[in-house]
Amino acid sequence: MTRSKTVITFGTYDLFHIGHLNVLHRAAALGGRLVVGVSSDALNFSKKAAFPVFSQADRMAIIRAIRVVDEVFLEESLEQKGDYIRAHHADVLVMGDDWAGKFDMFRSLCEVVYLPRTEGISTTAIKQGLERERIVQA
Ligand code: C2G
Image 1 (cartoon, rainbow, N blue to C red):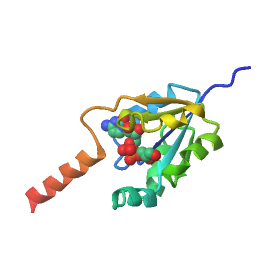
Image 2 (image 1 turned 90 degrees about the vertical axis):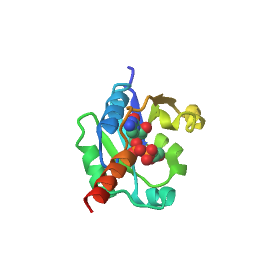
Image 3 (image 1 turned 30 degrees about the horizontal axis):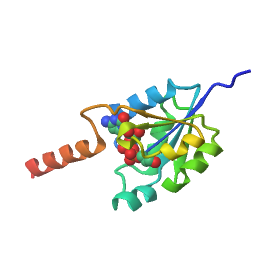
């Protein structure tokens, strides 16, 4: 009997937007089960010296509520990706192509697929837009 594929993907998903939804739908379409690692607040702080706008608990709750998502866990360290892939028995690792080439070392563990990003939207652009509005209104 052939087991349907488990797909794993990772992200911060702060200020959840259509680019996030698109990548989750496309990732889900590559297998029968989608597992999502949501980057912790501490991991974000270590990478960007800033916390996400939404807490990890809220970001996880939002991802858990997406119909195509089967399981959500907290990604606490970038270095543990291989362990997460193994622990969740993932057959496919999916990331947006802003990460193209960055996770090729996991090809010995699973298939690695980079999907095209949704053009014209990002958490950074949303934050900058809100900041501009705040300055204009001040
Ligand atoms: N994404 C996308 N299109 C956008 C914005 C984001 O396809 N316009 C994708 C990203 O490529 C990523 C996912 O949505 O696959 C989550 O994006 P972020 O929240 O920006 O994730 P990031 O901070 O890059 O965290 O372990 C890796 C990190 O956890 C990735």
